[in-house]
Length: 322
Image (cartoon, rainbow, N blue to C red; front, top):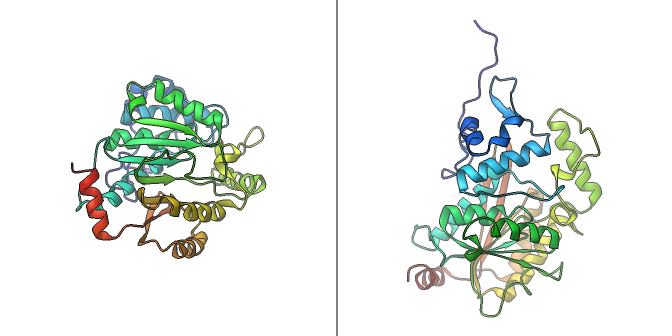
């Protein structure tokens, strides 16, 4: 009997059923789409091809390949030290929000440019709009308080065909303001999404990075990068995730009639009680918590609306089914 480790061919059943990343990465296909990925591929202890996830360049190049192969993004890059997000998890958020909109549309996912989505904190990577537009044809507005990140996202949009018609990246001048200043007079959105900074300080972010390096069983050869990339505005803010979410919930009231569903990821489960309390103060008509999981990591997002069930149905008829 062979003592060789068994190959891991298990389907990632925790990912959303429509997520294109439920199976192991097909590296021959990915390298065919993005040849530069080949230099980072090696056989791991299970006898499977993989990349070194402690190598930021390897992770970034894997993202390039995934976005090109699965989402037809021919040109994608981010500035050095900016957040390089895991594509499967980002896709999960998009697919679950599609299900959320379907609940307001008699079970049918609304598709096409009639659906407008506001991505708060689009980042240099612009990943949510890229995935959401490809999968469902939605139109996006992405906002950010970091001008370097915003310019990188705008460059991605500009260098990928006709995306300029469906993805608009806007600078937010006021760091503590979520919606005002970027939502223009008369604009209406069907959905907002957000991956908020979840640390309260740079020190807390560095501690999280050290835990990630330890989990990978390796040590960085130089000063560890936060979350293998990530600027202050991406990873931490005063008060951390809880304070950011409280501010977002309070400010959503001003735009309660101009957005059907507000949503945000909540990285820390212990922040949920404070989120629910803040939402109770707004008199939101409906609040949902949607659980997600990527591998051994559990996640979730909270969604809230100021519309009744009947008003949601009327919204869908007026905006999506015309």
